[in-house]
Length: 480
Image (cartoon, rainbow, N blue to C red):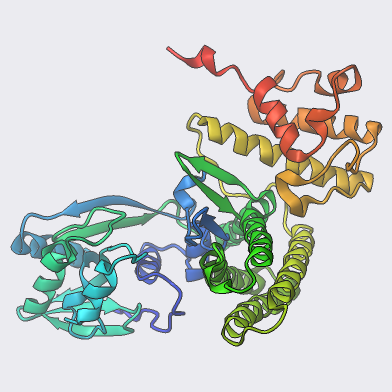
């Protein structure tokens, strides 16, 4: 039993996770236009994001977006190998790919195949790796073999013996030596995934989703959200760049106090990790820009070329760090900080230019679930930054939005006079009403023009603090 006319993509860039090519093929067979670039963008892989400990990875589910392109509607753990084969034959007989999860440790064509290093790298002290199951697609089955598609990282399509597939399908939890490994998701035996398009995309719909992906990327990067959950904070977009700059400044200050022992600087590992890993999100954005340029044309083709130069500069900054640490060149920390500071500023200006080419209202849909306390603050920060951006565009003000919540507004270090402040607050008031309904920001500009102290308006962050205390919808009314 075999799926007919199955000729999947095999040349996958190395930075894509193993599930995206499989999802791409499933969506194509469901009649939806798809691309790896858009799939990655739909899960915000293009958006720089990191935890406050420096761990760089996508944190899609910590933001408040609906699934725009595809969704996983079934994660099953079948009762036995034989039961699994029954489900597999039924699925393939209907013309669908069967997505199975297991362990690459038992795939004969894979580099991990019975490799002791696979065990060691997951259980060694201090390992930052989390143990996850590996996805493959089954497109055929006969009495002796399974026919599988596994492009990342093995670039394999072909036969696997039933015995080898059985060992794979038992999963990582069947390997006793991996018991101490860290896990971020449930590991399954005889696991399978069901995936579907949230809506079939024709040419028009695909262009619209590319536009929404770019709009969401621009909005989230320039807002630079920080979300706190428990004792951990997560930075997004420009917030990651600011987190890196803060670490560099603390690094320089620490070196001044301890010049003879630079290897023990507390932020050394954090900075090296950020610089190395921050490149990945930009690779995904490059792919999205190239795909958008093909479908949407000018001027996105020009923005794509300009972004290639920015990526090259991030790579050179990482190389400067690695080489300078080895050779211990004089003043290399000062040089690196200067290089990155200029790069962050130039990347911000690139985003400002890209923003003019993409409709501002084009973004993925947000979830309608009630906001958490942190969610309200995130929304307020977005509203204030968007209002500042509008003021800069139409009133020729120069609020430095690349500083995020630290951007000065009013007072001794501020960029606005009293009339400009009133204009800003009027725009914020409208944003509050757009978000939460009429009255949510009532009379904000009038109160600002009266006798309120200037302190709440000194920076974007202080204004958000003030709004959070004074102008949020009354959450207590919704309780009980």
